[in-house]
Structure formats: C-alpha cells, structure tokens
Length: 329
Image 1 (cartoon, rainbow, N blue to C red):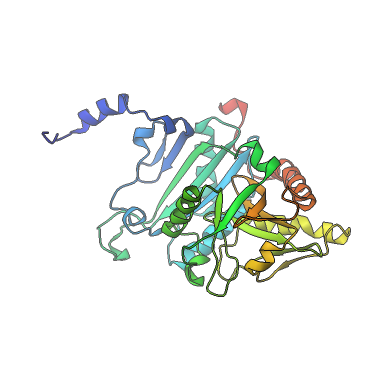
Image 2: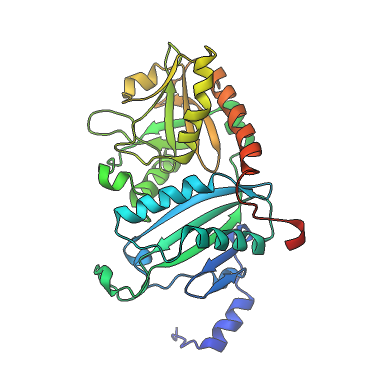
C-alpha cells in the first residue's frame, strides 16, 4: 500500500467524512494553540510534541455544568493551582481568564448539562524529557455530554475489588496530573474482572482510591470514615460530601465524620461503603472482593448523602458561574 503524502487540502476533505460513534459526545473544544474554540471533532487536537502528550507533563480538572451553571468551579480551580505549583507549571492565563474561556466554550457547545475537562500542559516544543524545550504552557478545554451511570448502579449498588496496581507515592498521588497510566490499568482491571471499580490497597493494607473515585465506609457505630489524603488525591466531591455530612452527626444520624486510615478488613465488615466522583456524585457499594457489604443493598447513609448532594448540586450550582443562557444558544 502506497503511503499518502497529505497536504492541507487533503486534510480538509478528510474532515468532511470524519465521524465516529463516540464523537456525538464531543461538543466543543478550546485550544490556546488555535486561539479559539471548535466544534468539529477533526479539529479537536493537541500537538504531538506537547509534553502533555508524550510525557504526561500536564495537569487537569473535570467538573460539571448543571442546568446552565458550573458546580464548584472555585474548588476545582484551587486544586488546579495547587497541582500547577507542585509540578512548577506556570498557568498560561489567570484563573479569571480561564473561567471566562470555560464559560465561553460551554456556550459554544450549546448545552445546559455537560462535563468539562480543563487541561493545562507544559506546551509543545521537542520530544525529550527536558521541560525547558517547551515554548509556553497551553490551555485546552473540552466540553462533552454528561453521561451518568445507569439507574441500577444507584438503586442496586455496584461491585468493587481490590486492585493489584501499586498505589502511587504520596508526592504524585496528591497531584492531578495527566500521567494516569496506573488509573487506566485499574479501570482495565475492573472491566476485565467484571466489576465496576477497583480500589488501590497500599503496602500497609490500607484503602486508597479508585481509578477516578474516592471511597468511604460507614462503620457499625455509624462513623463515616474517609481515607486521609496523604496517599490519594483530594477529591472535590468527597470533600463536599464530608461538609454536607457534618449536620447528620449533629442530628445523631451519624456518630461522626473522620478522615482516618481504613484497613481492608474494616471495609469488609462495614455497614456501608460509598464511592464519590464528579461524574456520578455518590454510589453505594454492595460487594467488595465478593464480600457482601451490610445487608447487600444500598443503605440509609447512602440515601441521605445522595439526597443532600443532589440538593447541593441544584442550589449551589446556581451560586456559581452561569455558563449557559437561552440567548446564547
């Protein structure tokens, strides 16, 4: 087969027929390299020599727009700043400018409900590990359809297993970088095992996190225990859940809310296990390594926390940056 030497005109023709089933979820992308936003999937590209592509040298955040308003954008941007400082990456724009670019990209996408992924890369320039080859950091913002899990995951619960993928070292575990190879392998591990999620277990037998999820347990004395953030990423959803759960302790519906080490045996013997994440909010775990959790059904603490978080999404999203209006549709 002869290798084609494509020119710009050839690529324009290829773009006309460029369509894959998964493209229906790709709504818009902003690229600082292009200097604007695009809606055609063929144009949603990142230079191959960008350090984010060939070295994982970048950071990112994922957050939701609900009913036309971005939820907890401030929390995500604060974590973005922390990650940038940790890897000595200069943001290519101020947080206010990044916010405006995010809002503008959502408006171009033309949807009231979506998932936004915000990437900051070291930038293009050379293919070695030398970060000083890169001319300037870049910003990419991708807006996709929001695809939550099926209803049965909320109503019947999910199954998890212990992961065999080594837990990240604390320095890297606490940075939301684009180097997600361990996370990818954990998700593959879950799919291959026929469960929804796997959870990392460190060398001391303590619970860590999922591929993109935080975990928590409800002990027999109704303590909500969440792993400390020393070896895992500080999730925005689990952090907010902990805040929302405090009044439940004051009302006597929970004993307390604590961030402590959790052993695997504690998880097996817990009354409930919960997962927390941006896409699905809160999910109940009904089996862990084939051990039934509690009575094997979603429990009352899960029900209370899910209701509280759903209310928070509706009320607090309205307090954050409006990203959509019918006038801009």
